[in-house]
Every structure is written in structure tokens, then in C-alpha cells.
Amino acid sequence: MTDAIYQRIAREIRDRIESGELRPGDRVPSTREITVNWGVAMATATKVLVTLRTEGFVRSVAGVGTVVSSEGGEAARPRAQETDLTGERLVLAAVRVADAEGLDGLSMRRVASQLGVATMSLYRHVENKDELVLRMIDHVLREEELPDPAPRNSPQAWRERLEVSARLQWRLFQEHPWLAPAMSMTRPQLLPSAVAHTEWVLSALDGKGLSLEERMHAAVTMFGFVRGVAVNIEPEAEQRQHTGITGDEWVDQQAPALLDIAATGRFPMFSRAVGADLDLRLDTLFEFGLARMLDGIGEWISGRSTLTERRTGM
Image 1: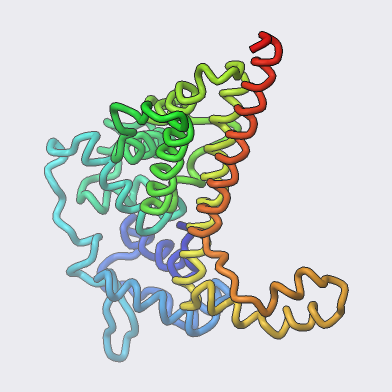
Image 2: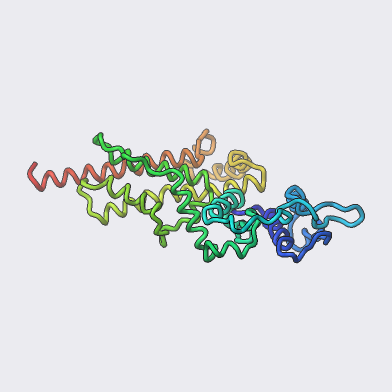
């Protein structure tokens, strides 16, 4: 999830502490200095120091200000035995960081701090952050595997199979908000766990009169739909965390502007929607879109079957 402004500033100061630039007893930027240097409000600056204080990185000293703590916090954790570090532990720690702070908050130094090891020790297991993210994607996609045996026994087995895959992806995107933005439509990560979803859809549509290219288009389009809705999970969660306002509350705040637009009379259909009690949450958008996608593929398959019957004289 993309960090709120105060989290990004806190991370910058935390990085200076962890790197040794700011040592125990050194003053960290005051709230006034934060407002000037980062161009934020006093309330945001206060949240920065509260965050660092809660994590144990800083403490308040009367007559001095806020200084780097000599005890507590991630920077003061005892170093773990680096011989105990495994690739699996590294990936699990990285997933925890990304789940809590988003990919923007993920760094080799941050993961090393989480594990209590030297940053350089991570490079014995991964070459760089890009490789680490690939292994994180592979890990979370394997958290909940597609069922075996797959649904096969009904005339609508293809639809059941596509729905199983889409719902599993949606669940994973909700549990790991960074996952959808991390995965690419144009440069897909060729991981066995990701290819398994493509294989699932291709095999579900096999024998339906569709070419391989058509089935591949269906597989990519289905994934694109689920991912397209899911990429909104991360920014919405970030906005809610940063502002403390839910999506419904934000919509309520827009009521005067919506009424002004409706009052122009230019958009009669939209005006009817303004006063209606509509449920447009991401979950409901996913459900609606998934059903319509499957309906459309069903009509496509039905039309192809009818054409085949006509050609064969059946």
C-alpha cells in the first residue's frame, strides 16, 4: 500500500537512524522543522514523531527535544544469527513488511531490520529488490492453490472453473493489497504459480470451439478484470488510513458538488443516481463485473457452438 505522507517522512528519518547517520542521543527534526522541510501541516508532523516514538526509535528529553532512543525500536534489536537466515524467512518477512507498508515501504534495509540481520546478508539469497518481489508474488500465489480435482461434472464446468480462479485471485489481492499493482499485464511475471492460473482457464475452455489465441485472450482478460478492480484496494486503504475517512463518508462529503451538477439538468440519468442508495463498493463492483464477464463468455461459447452445428449440418 502506498504510504501516507507521515509514514513516508517517518521512514526517511528511520532510515537515517538505521544507517547510523543519526545516532543515539542525536536530535531528530522537530515538528516545526518537519513542517518546513517537508512542507506538511503541523498535525502531520506530530504524527511522524508519534509513529517513531511508538516504534521505539525516538524519545522525548526535557529541554532538548526528541532524540534517537538508545533502547528499543527496530534499530536496537539484537542481531540474529545470520546463519539462521533462509530464503523462506526472507520472503516471509518481506511479505509482512509489504502487507503493512506497501511496496513503497519495502526496502532491503527495512526487511533486514525486521529480521534483525545486516542488510548485506540478504544478498546471499536474492540479487536485488526486484528478485525479492518476484519471490514474494510466487509465495503469496502459492498460499491458496487452485483445487484438484477441478470442477468438471456439469455442463457449466467451464464457468465454475473460471469463477474459482477469479475468486481466488480476488481473495489474495484483498489479503495482500500490494500484489495487484506488483503484477503486470504487459510484462507478466513468468512464475509457475502465476502460469497455473492461465493453464486453469485455458483447460477450462478447451473443447468449446475456441482457438488457442481466443482462449489465451479470455485468460488474460479475466485476470485483467480482477486485477483492474483490485488495484484500487491499496490507494483506498491508504486514503482511509491517512484521512480517517471511509469511502462512504467521502461520498457524503461530495453531496453538495453532486447536487450542483444534477441541478444543471444536463445529466438526467446521472441525476437520478445522485439521490439513490447505490452500493458501489469494490466488492460489489467485482461481483457485478465477474458475473457479466462470465455471461459474455457463455454467450460467446454458445454462439460458436451454434455456428459449428450449422456448418456440420447437425
